[in-house]
Image 1 (cartoon, rainbow, N blue to C red):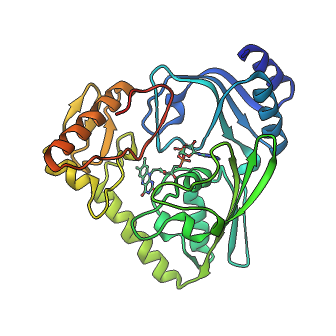
Image 2: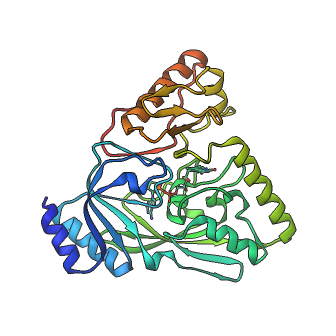
Length: 305
Ligand SMILES: Cc1cc2nc3c(=O)[nH]c(=O)nc-3n(C[C@H](O)[C@H](O)[C@H](O)COP(=O)(O)OP(=O)(O)OC[C@H]3O[C@@H](n4cnc5c(N)ncnc54)[C@H](O)[C@@H]3O)c2cc1C
């Protein structure tokens, strides 16, 4: 594979911003991550299509990311290309109770827009950071509601196939997983909302934000919940009951506000975070016989936490 020839070709085709050895710490909410060999911001569908043609021709693997709020990127970085969707994918429009949103739209803007139009259905997403693409890939949400339950359709760009539209009910939504084809790049989602009492929406959003502010370490860099909740229990409760709140490894801490959040004190490495996750897993397994499963997605080379 030739990164240099791919870089030159992508620049020649003006697909968007193309960088070499881009530090991924700039693109993750944990503020951790070494360099991506190639980092491409695709501003248009044509640019995305061109980018994939070049990467496939050069045999360069790729991963698409959103705001990096659910990612742990290795200190050694990522071999191959990281794709980010730009301008054209940040648009959204509202029609007949549906919101059609590009994958790079920030979810929080949609939540606000739906509220201002008196449309309900997105209240569960208040305070969930990241993009529509990331939320659809992760089936983001809470215990009782998630994005898959309001998704009318998802449009993907699949290499060598082009645009593929899937109806929401054709997608196997699960707990923090969408089952969408892993080679597909999510480019758009259509969400189905319904008219609702604005006062009820406002109260529900306020309640949810207040709960987050009092129970989550929102002032510190994190990737949200480190582990999924096991059936019938909560990962945070198990970690706290194992006496792990405040445990530190290098610059990574088990938050003393919410035990399922690992926060970066400013100097943490990915190795610190993964080492701490490993310690949490072992301690919870020994204390409670439960094997926690990571919720964060790993990018780059890691030993299993
Ligand atoms: C403080 C905090 C609170 C959080 N609270 C919640 C919560 O309540 N509920 C919840 O579900 N999550 C929560 N999260 C986790 C995270 O915000 C969500 O998972 C979010 O939906 C991720 O969006 P993103 O754009 O940051 O995606 P990223 O983190 O960039 O990527 C996540 C995954 O999606 C894939 N992906 C991203 N965009 C695309 C695309 N266009 N096409 C294909 N694949 C793509 C990536 O490859 C990766 O596998 C929280 C995180 C933080 C930091």
